[in-house]
Every structure is written in structure tokens, then in C-alpha cells.
Image 1 (spheres, helix red, strand yellow):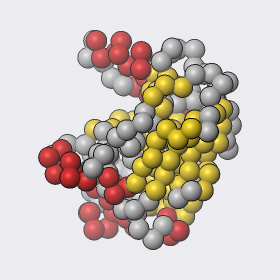
Image 2: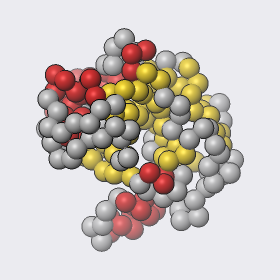
Image 3: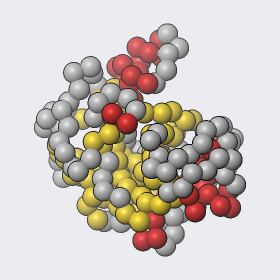
Length: 204
């Protein structure tokens, strides 16, 4: 099972998309050891003093595919969840100084909490899914998939041109363009899809 992330994939206004959309998607991978499920609390990682959150919709792949064509890409999605793509910002900055990769800053234990999954059949329009993140009861991020630069289908087609997608692979599809920030010990994170609370945990 692979965990794949896409960076910088949302805009604040749909009018911005045409100028930004070049076809070159920002893709990274995370180890499965970074996953946290079942709304378990997450221990604040010792490797960072700057832990940034990004709420994202997570696609689960339901069948094996390579070089998937755009018109067929949606059929490879079996379920959707909501998750947090954590980044250790200080670790990332240190790596970038030496032109290093994102792996340690994105792949530490606890870096990828995700909710339970919902069947993709429950969503009538994949381009109009609303989701949000609250921290300590305060709204921090609000997203709608209509503001994605690259749609679920475009992401799947692009990734599968480089690597075979396997059953159970997970894709973090990007975070809303506004509202990201840092978390600290004791913070309570709650993320919802279409108003349904699915992800609910604390940093301890």
C-alpha cells in the first residue's frame, strides 16, 4: 500500500486556475507507518517544534491500474475519507537548505491521520464536495473540490503514468489554499465532509 500526496492543489477563486494549471503536479509519497486510524490521539512528534496541519480529502484506490485514461479515472476510486497531512516545517526547511527531499518532514510516525472511509457512491458530484477542519472548536480551513487545480481524475491519470496504482493505495489530494497553520500539544482537531464529523482526535 502506497500513500501519495499532492501539493499546492487548491486556489481561493476558480478564476485563478487557468494561469496556474501547467500539468506539472507536485507529488510526494509517505510511508504507511505514518498512518493513524480510528480517531486515535497523536503524540506530538519529538523531531519538530513547528508542526503544520493541512486538511485533505483522501482517495482510496479500488482496482489496479497503470496509464489510466482520464475518462475512466473515477472508476478507480472506491472510497473517500478526510485526513491531515502533517508537515514538520523546521525539518523541511533544514532539508531544503541542502536541496533535500520532503520525506522526513512528511513521513514521520503520526504524520497521516485519516478518518473512516465512505463509499464513493455516496457522493453525487466529486467536483462539489465540501469539507472543513476545526481546531479547539474554531473553524480553521474550509474547502470545496471545485477549487482544486487538478481534479481527482487528473491526479489519478498523472500518478498512474509514472507508477502502477494498487488496490488500497491512498492519495491525499491537496489542502484548501487558505487557513493552514501550526498545532501544539493539547489541540483538538475535528474534520468533516459535508458537515459529517469523521475525524476527531487530540495532540498529546
